[in-house]
Image (tube, rainbow, N blue to C red; front, top):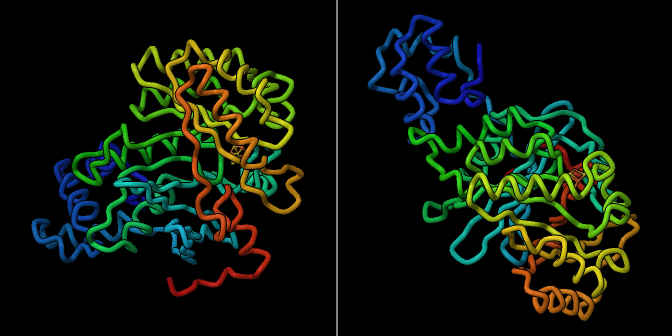
Length: 349
Ligand code: SF4
């Protein structure tokens, strides 16, 4: 028995053929399940009765259950999904203009140990299967009114996506396939802390690349992101250039502003120097404070000064709005808060 949602269209076709079922049934199943949200094989009227009776023994349609939904005053929605054995992950839905972006998790916890990150405190507990990633998209979509549709997906939730690259790229294939969800590859972004040897796979997949940069020299970056000791800035930035050369796209560089750590005018100028030959846009993200992080959010004045210095130098800069502060929208926070509050029973969502 396989989980239907773990299989790309090609894998599903191969699996069916291995069971003496015609290949074209894969297309029918994709269309029914992803295209029409039909999850009862009995209702799939263009499939023979004999096969309809056989399918439940070959394919499960299990998806992670949604535990809670929190809606922020600013319109951000945060969802908690059950991953079994008391574990959960979160997804965040962020409205912005005509875009509706879903931030999905790829792992329960994370081993990258970024010092400013709440998820890092939970350590890696397990990597998600493709069905559990696609399941976040399907689960959240099912909660939305007819006229609201998720337009973009970013792998920026819990976990380092390139630490789980097989399942992440499998889920991208599934989201993209024209028989099913038909999401453009360019509407999917993979954000990495910098697992350099895996970064070429983002270009291969057709998805967009975002890199969590956060430091302008190896000393600062290694101090807040231990992964930098393994793959320092020179290697990381070369991988960014390679991505741009291969795809013709820009890379998005994420830069968290931490008071007195990464927020000086000198840092802004150094950031420009470091990235001026890379086709990129830089997202500056004022730190979203959480208890016992040991870091502070810079003052509004310092944030503005940093942004202006970077723009004056010539960088393409966007300031990411801090969304959902009242529902703990920083990476990994909802899970921890829910755990503390014993809020893990399936709730009415
Ligand atoms: S910021 Fe991302 S990569 Fe770093 S510890 Fe948190 S979840 Fe992992």
